[in-house]
Image (cartoon, rainbow, N blue to C red; front, top):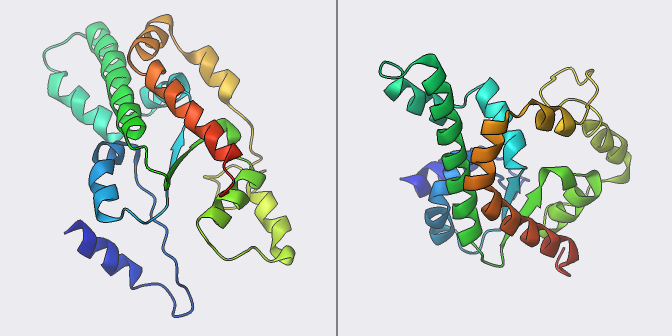
Length: 202
């Protein structure tokens, strides 16, 4: 079914386009072994970020997987207990995501940390994916993408790094859960990100 769905979406490519790129949600990492079994020869990139920063975003605007967990227990826990349980669930799920990514260690599956997401790195990764080279006349527009907020369709809002802000917003209890449940796997993935930078194939 999954293979058929991907093939169906790929049919929408214009005739002169030979590549399809699929972006999966974070929880899909739990199924990465299945994806790599179906497409073992297709390059794969896993984008990661410090789990404390991810958790702060999740607690502020819960993704579907966290809302689903919360809903199952909202009638049996107090607000305070529910908030603590959400922090624990978030830490456990992020740990599971990173663990799944860490176990997928084939040579065509690379890792890139959010803090290293630069135009230079993206150009190298595009080359590794064997995507067509970006024409020089389009480079200014490409660079502009990295200076604007990604969710602003008008591309008028300036991009500002929010790493320090998210780190400051993390409660001690949330930080403790993340460090206990997700930090080790994240740091293991960071080592693979360094390997990407040094790899001669990129």
